[in-house]
Image (cartoon, rainbow, N blue to C red):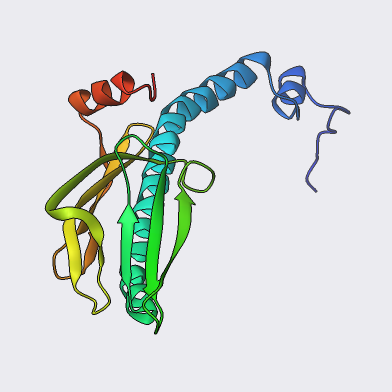
Length: 189
């Protein structure tokens, strides 16, 4: 028969340390450093992505309001205008209706882009046709041009064309010249 040697009770000292369930201070510090580095890379990207989302959402809202304005003007048998100015956080939708007797009534709706979810502002308004954006009672455009919206240092253009369409461009980081214009107007620092 084979002879077996008896095992010693307990584990050797090195085996007891190897099977320990706790972390050493060095391991804990290394993990915290890695998490800190990853967070330092992610936070600025998150801020930029949030700014792009906000300005895109505000641009979609402005384009949608412009496209809906044609229907409202035609339904009211009057003119509809989208009134916006540079460095403002609001724009106004104005519809003037005429009744059978010829009297006019004007209704206005103000859209504020400064609260959540937009936190945006109108950076620039430029007209390529006419002096305002809108439609007459027959759905013909009164003006065309672009609205440039911004959120923090990200800008997005809404093109309002002479055929009555609206398109939203991609959100882009503002140039240093544009940033200087915002600061000069009392915006972001």
